[in-house]
Length: 65
Image (cartoon, rainbow, N blue to C red):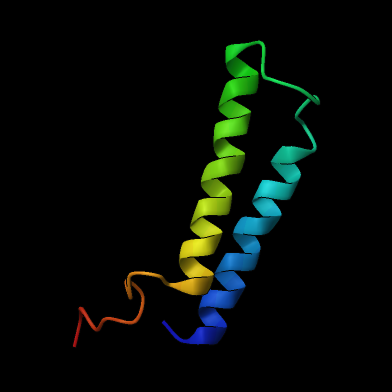
């Protein structure tokens, strides 16, 4: 993936995290649904970091040459 493509996908994941974060109540999650929403926010932010910074060179490798 090119840097431009990774930035676009990473910003989309940040957008997903932002939308899901608006549904969270302040404080610790008290129900399973709130815990699942918090998990989605954390996972989306993790995926954004992986796409933007590519710490393990996952997206730079050429698998299909």
